Amino acid sequence: MAALGRAVLGRAALVTSTGVTGAPATKFIPVVTAGALLILSVIMSILLLVPINNRGKTWTPDNRPADWKEQLNRWDRFLYVRVSVIIAAFAQPVAPSPDTQAAPICTRSPR
Image (cartoon, rainbow, N blue to C red; front, side):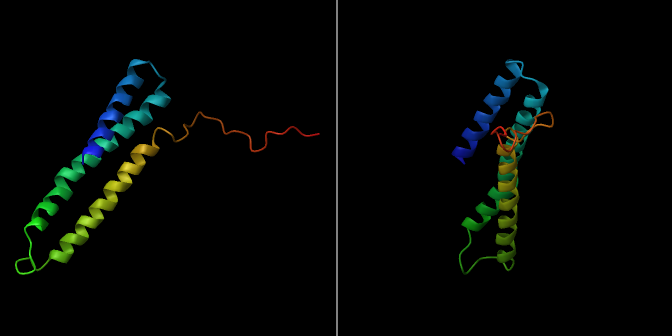
């Protein structure tokens, strides 16, 4: 969780520095979107994953609830969604913007 917190703080610093330097909106919007997605991932962790973890810590083979497998499956699904959100957040700033032209496939001039 500490690494995720550092990643969010680093992304927040990037968002702030991008806004301060006066970068064009085509570069600023993906960075802000990435920051928002990372904040969403932290909120998902706190509201969805941590409560299931806390309940699971108290279980023993004798006192676990009847739906314990369903709760573990729900935790797995939430984790997959959260990881997808984090991957999307880190892909945002490096994704090409609509105004970016693609590099030529072959740079060798014809003879």
